[in-house]
Image (cartoon, rainbow, N blue to C red):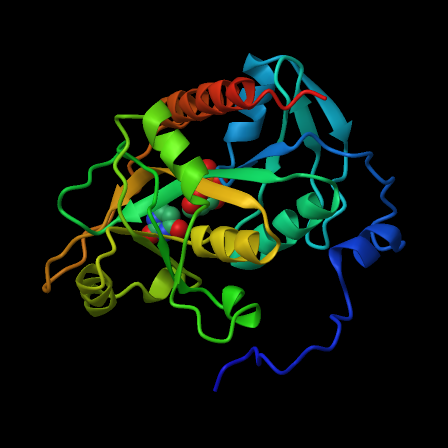
Amino acid sequence: MPWCKKEDTTNAIITAKRNMQSSHHDVKMIQKLPEIAILFFIGKAIPYVLRTYECDELSAKFPRFLNPCPIYRFKNMEACFLDGGRGAPQAADTLETLAELGVKTIISVGMIGAFHPAFHVGDILIPSHALAEEGTSHHYYEDLIFAYPAHPLWEELKNLLPQAKSEPIVSCDAIYRQTLRKEEQWRRQGCVGVDMETSAIMSIGNYRHLQTAAILMVSDVHSHETEHCAWEWKVTDAMREAFTRTCISCVQRLSSDKEITK
Ligand SMILES: O=P(O)(O)O[C@H]1O[C@H](CO)[C@@H](O)[C@H]1O
Ligand SMILES: O=c1cc[nH]c(=O)[nH]1
């Protein structure tokens, strides 16, 4: 049975706007944000960005519902950035709150476990679409299977990052239920790897009329063997940092192309 019914036109009880205006987190309202936001789903990315780039803190508490964290902007680029949280519910909360504060374009930057033999640790992927096997998107759409990025943004990112591959992925809530059989089924559906946020970013981005796309780095490869499931987390701090720099320079070129300054 679908969780979201088209005939349900009633209002949501909590909205991003009401949450921001409430006393929930005792958060001071942020003024309008730049139109481009980078959401990092990589724990070590934010401290690295703050060490490496000139940035201003816009608020110590971005007023989302779940686990508010600081939000920053680059001094030399019309873009803000923050930690997107982990998993589809926090990604959706962050995206809805950014939309309420004037953000129009969201680039999510994260990691992905690859279960296709053509992918190796450190490869960069700009997903063409994402199978929605997380629960959040299915409360926005009655019959969603795949979620798609904004096509022009996706094309621009691919041009800016010619080394990146572009294939379908799956987003899944259940880290410890990515079984061999499940991953075989995902491969048959055309997917090459699994993360926890991309389908929600894309589907809810479409729902809120935002331009979204994702840039992901392969952090681990998943065994295809039926006998034993060897698995190791392979990504290093240096790889995370190089990937973060690559994504930021890509957004820098994107934002100057767009001349988003008012
Ligand atoms: O926080 P780091 O180690 O960067 O890793 C993040 O990325 C992994 C999943 O994408 C999770 O482990 C999450 O915490
Ligand atoms: O979400 C993720 C990220 C990396 N590897 C996985 O298996 N899942």
